Image: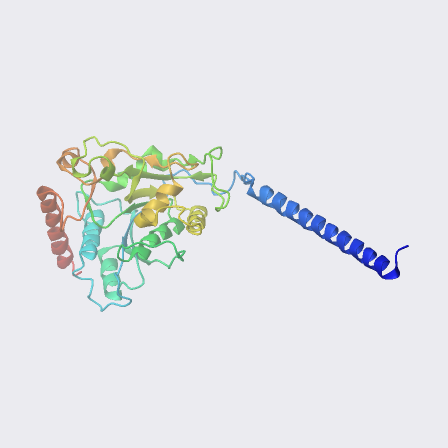
Length: 350
């Protein structure tokens, strides 16, 4: 016969064992639920597609166009009035203004605006001078960047401000060209190209990220392959197409939906290579195998690493820092246009 203390001990052990057993069952159940939730959340549900979201108009005779470039004030937070007067990019911007708005052989239709997007530290004197030259000067608002978006390039943060052009929905199409561009023909005729007039349908059947902002149902974005990847200065003419385009020459239909999409890309760690800044972001957004592949404009419109073949082939824009590099004959052409600009604006009191 069991003694009373032994009976009590046995009952206590049974309760402890039962409590431990129940605790293990609860823990296993919680673990199973957590695993199920993780598996469920890892399955990407296809995003809802709205066929009316972000539609783009075909261009008409009433459409508004702009050719835009970008001017930064450099590293300093504030500048004196005339600090940029001798800055080569400011001079190049004024050469563009002269060529696009005033030079008889290259000036655009008067209805096409020349927009100069500037950073906040570009002095009022410089802005007023560009306005007097005929440009529409717009200060770009800052764009918040994630901690991982950085590079060793001077004023790298400023380069992402070019994305603000996609918010300029008062224009039906905007052509962006870097300031270090020499114009050799009627650039506004690019707005007559079918690739520019007609929007493309977003290819929703292609793989896309569900952690990014929704894509518009239509878009219009075209550019030129970068000759850096096909021989640099020794590239053939006609040039070869490449997977990557140069962000120094592109044309788009401004779209708030696209701008929001770009901002969502910036939130994800190394979704693109930050070393080449906005060029890498745009090449990711409009990658050839993605849902919004970029369109290839005819090679006559632009050349990076320009050479004699591009000149003889009558390429309309040549992208190079001609004040310090490039073939001698092309540097001479740029100096001639710089001199023409200075004489013209001096004559007109600018």
